[in-house]
Image (cartoon, rainbow, N blue to C red; front, side, top):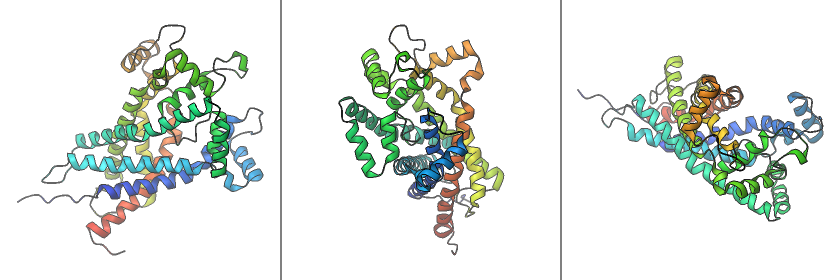
Length: 357
């Protein structure tokens, strides 16, 4: 007697669930990112902390000011999650057993890894190229026009980012050239301009190109791609595991999780990615931070960097900066999965199990 085939949710439904989840996540987290950016730009001590900053922005500029820059942030998250969820579903379809429709743990891991790599190549690269074009325009004196254009469009967050060299929220996450400039600027200590090597984002980009060539802007590309792939492999596998362990939920069974259940699973799954990808994230930052000018490169590549850090600083050094990542990523994943599971659950009940509304 042949085993019945497990029903599946089409990739386009998964992609749709990701896009809606991305919009909701961006809408919920944007005030936090606005406050973070204001605190980073505050050199005069105007804000006394996170709560005071948010309250000050609300009193002086209105509640809408806490959602400045939402459009580009939401657009990026929507595109990222649409591709991530849709491509993962396509890869899973390819790895499923043709007779039973079952997906092995290895297939699930490979599907998530493939989705992460594809996300890095398709979503990361266009944003990276936009950053380069923006830098070139600013270098040749077109910066003020771009700033005014973005203000006119209502993208005040982007205009602020152009002027001050602050990344446009966390929405452009992953662009290699942008991150190289950002990390080089952030590693400098002190505020006195005459003591700083890099005077600003444009000067930093020009200095890197002059001293290290265009390749200098793509330092850390390999660990970035590996981080993306490993992160999604861990996240999708963990989410499926937590759904089964905590709620006895399996894809295609018609059971729709409550939003709070999905948020718990999503939050826990969101911790798996940073924990698994910590070494790649540290190596990415180290490779981006080191310069070629005036001396020999300490790290010759991803593998050499991992071995060197381990030998000189110990195993735990490969997970430096883990806590800040855990403060940002799991809450976002909780929100996204809380929405996405409702979309896929609705499809399961209506189109797989023909349940009434």
